[in-house]
Length: 144
Image (tube, rainbow, N blue to C red; front, side, top):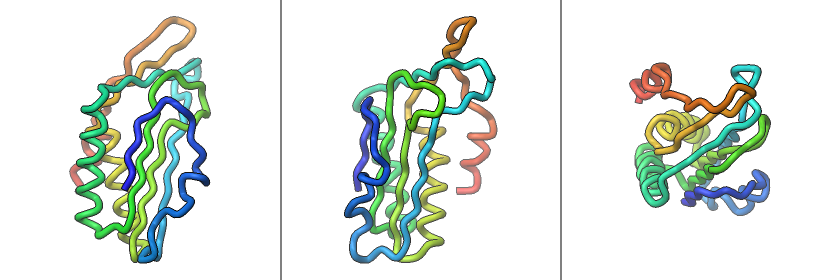
């Protein structure tokens, strides 16, 4: 299991070298990129609380490993200022079977979005706006 909070870009393919272990029959990956919902966003800024963020992400990943008997987990989340289209996070899960790998990846995405302490700020032509949590993200947690 590897959890990383970093400002540097990552290479998704390189991150998967050796990932999964010999017991894995399935690997599921997700890469999140900056999207421009408003149509006017020039950049997205992500802030985190060092130490607290890594602990929260590790606890979420450990729960996924326990619930789905994962053979490996990778979570990378970047912080800093990003242009539209840049990679900001990656989740990879490895399990003996695909259903477990897919479900664990979805669980991780839902919980990381709502429970990992990151703060998002949209930067546009009229200034900066903090992005509030969405009710739909909280609702997504109910299925777990």
